[in-house]
Length: 257
Picture 1: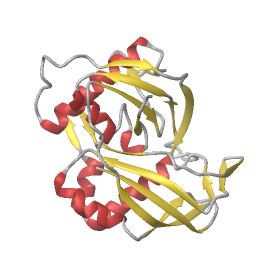
Picture 2: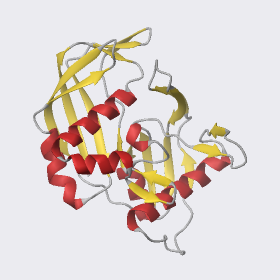
Picture 3: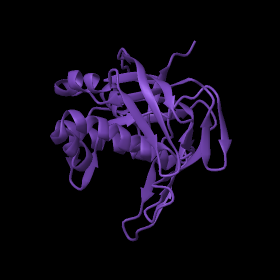
Picture 4: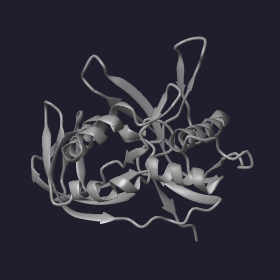
């Protein structure tokens, strides 16, 4: 399920440049108002496979038509902005999630600056047809990291790295196992990645200005995937790569002429 929200500026004009963590917290707060048990599960458990947990929920960067960067702040110069929120389909939650977002106000920001928005328009977007070869454009940075079992060292991979496509495929498989509680079909092909643009790195600071601050390097780019439609659907609805519920890996389908 994918929702497009049009947000009308009500109060304030300045956000932190690194607003993804604050936006994620805001969305969790909205969900918690409707069903605390569901949100507790979404935040603390999600779909589990072994030690790994997947929320299968993601959202885009804020689309701000006009803005100005002032140090670590982002000043909004437009009257309205847009946000995409996407969940991997769970029929039981569709109606109540849509109701939570309709005709309400949301506040995003940190201790230094905050902005109040009103959700003026909510649109449930149609689901695309999922086939074995599809093209996508990132709406928020796509993040993958290589973890080394013999140490705590990790490497944030760039899409040109051959390991990137392999880990993208493994991540989709793990999400499938967690959601459906079964193994992907052995006949399913490995997901193949073809870059359609030069990836642009974007470093996001989560919990900026705190002792828990973490810097994550994701990438914005256009790409084509060849693979099993069920896995491509998982990535589209729930997010590709890691940290999806913190606003990474949200994409839109590209229609190539």
